[in-house]
Length: 496
Image (tube, rainbow, N blue to C red; front, side, top):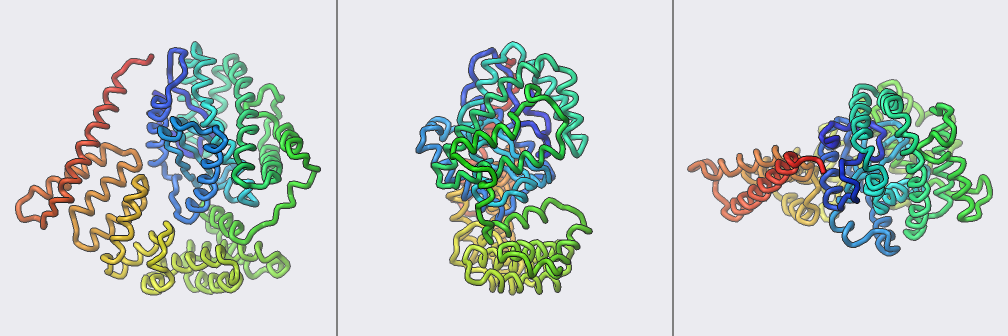
């Protein structure tokens, strides 16, 4: 199946259908296909689980999900069955894409250029609507007889894209080998894009985001597309022309041209965009330019929000360059700049703690963190500081409570494993490591880790036996074995 092919985050595929007999794909089958693709994405070196960026995106995402439920776009069945997970990738291209089963890909390149939460909500609402409107199942129902042909072309395209930093080779292979079929398919894709625009606009405005963000986002997409446009006629495009989509958004809210730019740049958003830019790995020379920008003459003439973004990028870039003296000086300027703006001041404080940890000063980092705060970035930074200061015990209950309510948080499970290991709780450390593998859908690795924990418990005199923990490990091991058997049976099942 195509889902078994490694699919890098930089691949521009938005839909990857499975094979069917013409009937609509069930929600369970779509989730199974999505899990297979997500498993490969988790392994991709471009995949990034940065707690600060993820928290920012998740805040918007959860509001959109709530709005989709309220509007009836997100049905109880899909709500329960699908993953509703966003995967961040370091790719610098301006892109986001929907995948089967409620998974979404979001490139840092897009997060780096959006000027507001409202613009980001436009993109996420659009991709959410691709999923809630069951576009993958609908495309299967419409093109069932030609799916094997398209699937083969897509597999070849994905492989070609994985060999290159751009998707041009893969796209050329798909288009060149299946031109007649793709023309028929593209027409349906344009309809789906328009539907996602319409439904997504309703979802993002229902969630409380400014409708101007939609027109502003499409203007950015139009500019980005102009830089890479191949001059195709409108009927040869898989997406409607962005000028058409901008006009549609303007018509929906009776915008006047240029009115979309009225949304102000908020200080915390400028800092988040700066973080995304740095984490795209732009290279040493660019990082040094961002450090220098904090001392350039233009800095004083920029707005407070722009100054905060510049200082954040400069401090984080200096940290990436291992110039901790400069990073500390820049983050102190950032702290002074953001005083009085609580969300931005928090981001500055967390960055300061990151810098201290990277500089080998975990005690200083711990002093910047509040152990009573239960948000994810603070918890994970505090866990790192606790391991580095050889005082893991106080943080174990807090992180254990977190994973109890967020069992699919692989990074939190790994942090908990580190805490257990530093506290000489070997069995619990192995179990937490196994759970992190479950969270990233690597069930074979999880089975091996659970077996290692079982072997350690059964070895006479090896470790003190916690019978409650041993019982949990046995139960989870059986559950993972059952899932692996289901996967094996699914792979042997012939295509329908």
